[in-house]
Image (cartoon, rainbow, N blue to C red; front, side):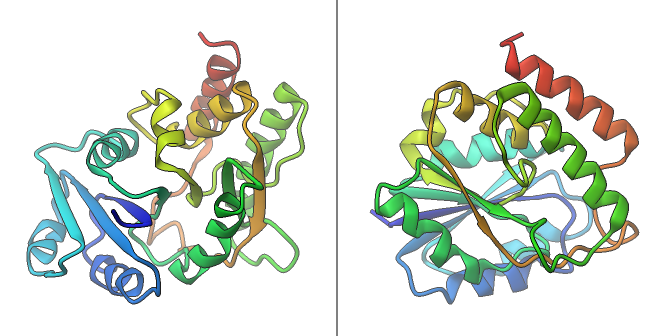
Length: 225
């Protein structure tokens, strides 16, 4: 059994997917890499078929079903003791895995979040403000103080992820994980990470309509609606 399952939902990331796989494969930890190609139309599937690593599992969705659905598919195939979610772009550095897994290994936390918006962050102003506003809403609703609920980097034991009963099919999977962990009184620890955001023209970013939808999702998960 591998120590770590790395879950990568992929949708139209032909320009970066091979590089992110190589970076993860080079990490000094026993792992499996589980990629779910979520109906990509840009050649990502063709690139993935050309990657040959023994610890690599590739699953293809015939249509685009959403990030949450891709994560659910990957969780069903994971076998590691621990699990982390990794976006397919290069905004997050897999070298951070090693410091994120430590607190869960040592029994200090049940869920570790890689916090982006700490001292020294430089990036898209509107993106940062949107994420901070939504995180403040979570803090207000749950009476806590988190820095970054919408970070991709969420690491926990595989059994913890599975026990949450995740059902979100889209990007609201990010907030579903955190709010369900909070409702179950799990210990959440944030660790600062490096973050290199792409421009709006390069990547998929939360926009105003997404923010309104995300705020509604926070209320829904808070009250179990």
